[in-house]
Length: 175
Image (tube, rainbow, N blue to C red):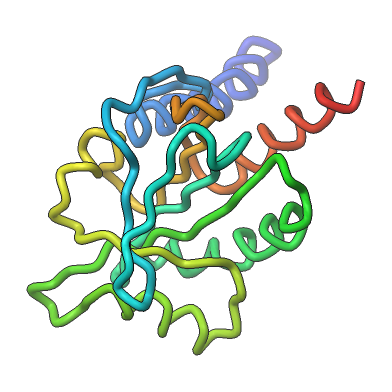
């Protein structure tokens, strides 16, 4: 009996780690990937925004699309994280709507969806066909990336795991 209980307890975390690996290419979320070129998005007004290494200490990017139900379920968690860090100079958070032009969407669609649901976190846009998504390793939605001040991806996962990583970073910085 003890063997079965032990196997069950070990299998649940193991299964979660395996699913995380399938979705994000890392068992724990911790990674170190250099981003080869500038990270550029569109604002809801159509302007280009480029993140360079001098823009931030840590950059959180939450990638989602219109047809992702889990993305909508995670928006309250994204809002909570944004509310927690919006005055912290170390962190910047942006929601990145990956729009589908062939479905009539454009750079304004994501902002409209979020404001109609009363979310206040900043929103950027990117065509779902943009090659930058592949270079960042965004294959599934939602995907949340945490980048350091040199634009290296240091964590990849979902909003809950990235929130935990941010808490860890804050604890280390406050020691």
